Image (cartoon, rainbow, N blue to C red; front, top):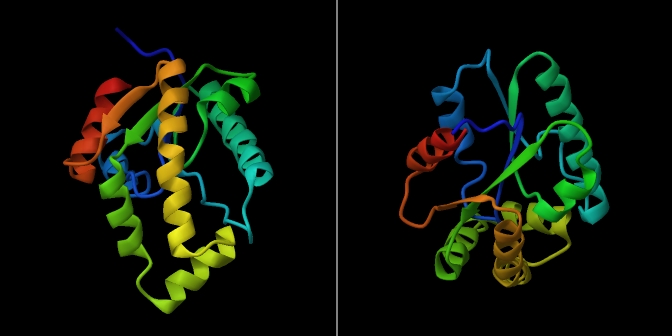
Amino acid sequence: MTNTSMIFFVTGVCGAGKSSVIPHLLSLLDPEKFAIHDFDKRGVPNNADRSWRIDETKHWLNVGFENSLKGIKTIICGFARPTELMLLQHHEISSCILLDIDEPTLRGRIQGRYTTEASVKELFRATGKSVEAFIEDNANFLKTLRAECKDHNCLVVDTNLLTSEQVAKQIVGSL
């Protein structure tokens, strides 16, 4: 069965592997047929909030629409909520792929990212949260994101035991 979507959002909580999969998608997909972007490419402002995320989602939907006019599919890797995508979508059909992760793995991956004073300061600048609060927020949001993805029939890729390359291959297989 061929996927008719032209715009794909690869979503998940922090630590699920959204950014790590980008280089592998770039190496696996034809750049004349696929444009691959990091959701945060344009920068993350201080205390990034829902309003910023909605604005960025609109931006990437517009980029995807422009690409679809040229016959190019667009993949955006970053945090996006399926319910918001469906509310904002007004162009091409969008599809969402959840990179899922179990809570212990999530906690370990996030803790491993913020081990230096500079990385902790950058996290606080972008989110206004300590590492511990950021971990709790992501762990608590897992259930909500999974439910939204189930409600919207998103493909789910369990990233716990897979390399980024293996995750990318599963994503490519669904396109």
